[in-house]
Image (cartoon, rainbow, N blue to C red; front, top):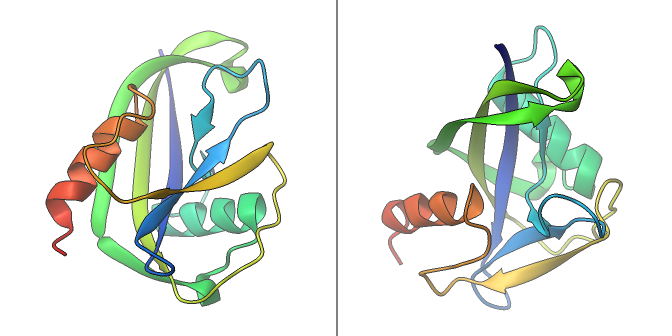
Length: 143
């Protein structure tokens, strides 16, 4: 069985209230909601991949966020992969936490839209990866 790794960032903001960024997928996608994330490239480390994907998919750069690498969500599961011609692979997902430093105008390249969701746990958005991520994040954050 092949193995793939995707890395990304869950972006949070404090103003106008504490909320997090969710990407909206195009109609017909497997899931309605997503996070800015993508496959790691050869020679790339997890943080570099997460920051590259964040910038490519949203226009948010390292200068726009405070990256908290002490928060590292990991999930390993089986899925089908375009990289492996639709075959089942073992996927490792790694998500870091980024706090937005200032307002940004998002520049979407791979999603149909986005929304900021108020931080008010528990959250029930997407069962497979986003809900467990938010549950772990809730335990990590102390407001």
